Length: 480
Ligand code: BG6
Image 1 (spheres, protein in one colour):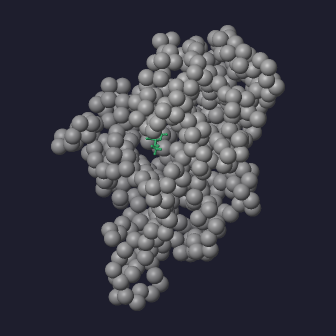
Image 2: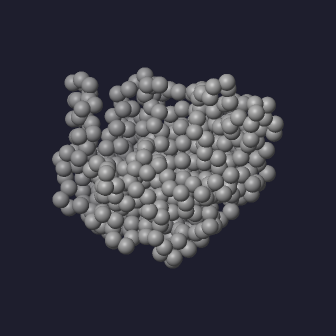
Image 3: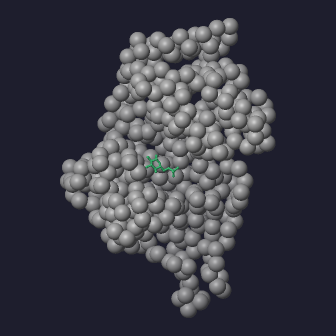
């Protein structure tokens, strides 16, 4: 039985997620098996720790309240929310300095008194430059002597192969083992992303045609209708490829393309993902198109502002906020099938999808009118799987939809996995190294060239150069 939970967080945002996680799983008994079987922690404590000396629990609460208060349905839920804040403490300090942990260690010791086992989850949302010294400081201060200690690590896991390896090596040399490390990629906690393997391997329909004989191309599409929203300082250092492509969208791609694992164990799933990545060629610069949004004079509010209007972004910034990259997998199943990852901020809509386009019919009985059929996994909004068929009149068939069913937040699911020691939905060290290997040469070439990305207007659906790259590899856009 878990007796303690310690979460070190870096911003109020994470605590919002943490509250939702704890809150929902304590109050929604219906579909939480963990709740029913009593596996959720009964005794826990959240010890916040960050560099902000002005923050207090009351301040943090004031940043969380606006997201939660209106969702509390009755006095019971309100009381639970109050109770939640009683287990939260906050201390500030330098996370790399062992002496600064003294107040946290004190809280932990007091809480542990009289209990036989103390399990600890340490949640890192840290900039990479203080990462290794923080994990070292923790090792000598907060490692549990009576139970397990698990590190949950938020991205960025470095910014290229070398820096990522440094972080992974630092953890290893400090004695953290692979089974203690949970690199969180919240896309792996999304309902539809978690459904890719069950839909592929739990049915007979897709797998026989899920290969180069039938599939022309696969596009992972990510669009957001908002810009960098005041995160210019962070974004300027990373850009869209490091922000969402090398991690979230590549993870989705590996689930779409990997071979069937022997079992659903973490090692079998991660092993197949790793194999897939190993057969992926390095991204070539000629297979990349980049864009940066400019303000739309006719837009409303934020839409009038371009990326470089952010006060933390230099006017001559060459950082991209939109990209199309083409990846190639050299294995029997996928040789010759291009995988596009198209991602953009400040576009016309919110949409994340996997779009699998089949090859044209060998022989079209219908006077050449048949379009290419497609399988589409819509990750968000409104999770669904669609098949696009040619029928007498073109229609979409929706074969999977949860309607209004309650879907846990990605972080809720993933934190549950951490509690239960399930690692299949976390990114392993080898896998991370391969994911960076694919992107690093192109990212370095792009960083060095300092070329201006193509301009696109806030709210644009796409732009010509982005479409041209996909068209070059045979993507046919069909509007039906
Ligand atoms: C984050 C990126 O990791 O993922 C953001 O830093 C991006 O830039 C976000 O907006 C997208 O996540 P979601 O769950 O909102 O699709």
